[in-house]
Image 1 (tube, rainbow, N blue to C red):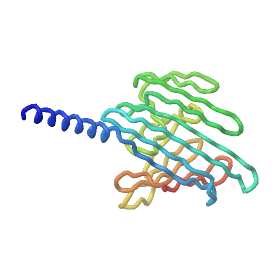
Image 2 (image 1 turned 45 degrees about the vertical axis):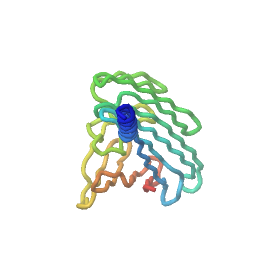
Image 3 (image 1 turned 30 degrees about the horizontal axis):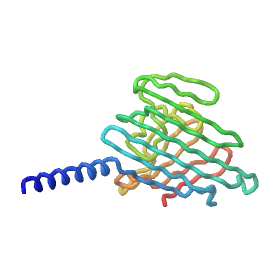
Image 4 (image 1 turned 180 degrees about the vertical axis):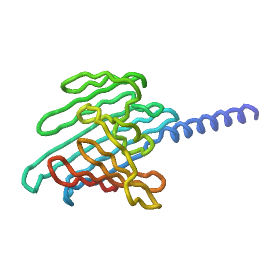
Length: 207
């Protein structure tokens, strides 16, 4: 009888450990429909896995359409980001843009980061962060890493004027573009809007 009780206790603890592990490492899926001037041009999805001290994010963007209704374009972007204690520690990305493939990689020990892109290798000090729209708490600092081209972009992040009490709106300003983001009261990312340099309004709407 004692043996059966002991076995039952072991099985219970094992099942609970597996459950606790799966819960702490469960993946969150976020997907957006992407529009260019009200025309559907594709999707952008994120898979986010969180543990107590780290985050892994996989991003997949697939766009196809026409600028001004005339000029065809195709754009794809896949990246994997590994974060620890609020800083990027590893990045691998691949982008297809204007008929060319761009690869970017970065590795960091949270004090020094090495960023390798198509045309250069750059070593920077301090905590590196990307444009982590998927987690409002990580959108901090005066520089963010563009995972498409490996460039550190000078930014200003501020609350948008006239934001409602039921959510939060912020704008990321840079020399490249202004990016407007909408979040629910619980921090859930809802939408993105940005005027492209080549023209047209890019708009994300959460599925």
